[in-house]
Image (cartoon, rainbow over all chains, first blue to last red; front, side, top):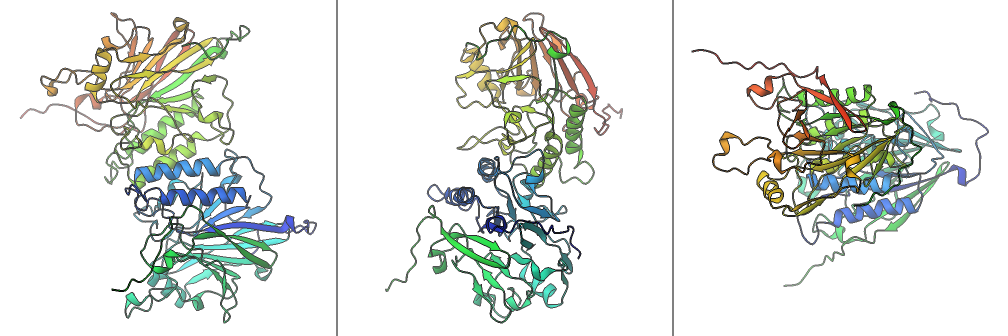
Length: 313
Length: 313
């Protein structure tokens, strides 16, 4: 893959001019328990908080890891509430001092003024289906959302990154929206996924965002393909952002064998009565400067407290 | 009701500068027979044609008379197809040389560039419901659509017009989205609807757009309230635009007793196997200059031909 641009050697080298700031969130599950009079608003409130904090932090963009919607066919009410939250937070006047290649983001549309660009892959709750391969995310794609990572041939596919350049920092962002775990397992195991890279890929910060089972759950029994082994992910990646798993980790974890880090933002709403969901929920502010990065954990204030413990008989 | 503005006496009096051009369509029924392999696209194609013709004609705005959606809870597929058609046709660069008062239209939103403003009321297929009183039209309200005519208290309500001014032509547009026929019948019969008017209302061109049964159908039996008698509509109106009835009339009909004209655009897709649906379908280009108006009928080219006749045994 050859680069679509020639880097200008006179790019500013000020740290600020080359510092990417990206808010990361996942599994917002809009519409979860929407008919519950007490908890019905929870998913919307926390999603709105994510957007408001992202705007307050003036990030370059917000990156969402799938399961924006809880129901595969969201109700009219959920779609309208999502529409209102997006309309109120995405639009606005802001200059975006970074470049995007290999994707037409909404803020390049001369008819829209976008304050908060959002890039998003789908999860298993909002994966595409039907003859047209539509996901509910498509409702907002092009205007409020920049949807990527949709795969049409599950057995063999090519991935092209979205390229971001800010000063001297270059990011190649690859996304794979949720696929049935077995399908992705087999496609990766059989080397049927082609990761197209810039020729000088080692000078890029390479990110993969996925939405799959991270661990071989005990409940899956003998089926050992119901998750994505980290060892199947190419080693040229610097950071893997893992959606689908609801437990929030504040720090990225390094895979010492392969070299990349894995960051798991967790969900923004509790959807299962299990211990890991009782941990403090949050989002991550990813800062990237050339090859260096850090993730600043931010707590979500709107999440309903949830206590999980064992009680003796 | 006092006017929110003072008319500038130096307004241009050129005919072009004072000529309002408004495209009228109704009952687009997006999603009608969406699973039918042959007719599934029909509603979308004709709606898209309406938008494209409205853009080609460079009208000031498009006015829709309700039942944009066929199903009360439109499918994800229908919402996405509607979203795509609206996105592709509503946005664009255009200067709007008329003023709007008592409503914030989308083209006044500094974050959006709107080429084709659309004003719309709901019909009986997409009327608001639930605790929040949401209509499917709300999904697009604020961005692609300017939704008005929603009533929250059915027994007694006040109507405020949207005011449009272009040169020396002034329009007061009143909308009542569909109400159960009996409800509106009783509210109007009992004088419980308050039509707020500009003080100099006689110098305005007063339009009412509604979505109700126009005729007392034989099938309703003894119930005589299942329609809206024209005599219930105040006589200060110049033009009544009647949605819900699917038969297309090319000409407005004058009610000689009351004085106003009634224009019935009809549907853009055939949804019943009855004679009136077999007539040529179309839309109307309403031109208003001061107190004068005319409606230029335009044929729809995309409507599937439908022949209705009696066959002898």
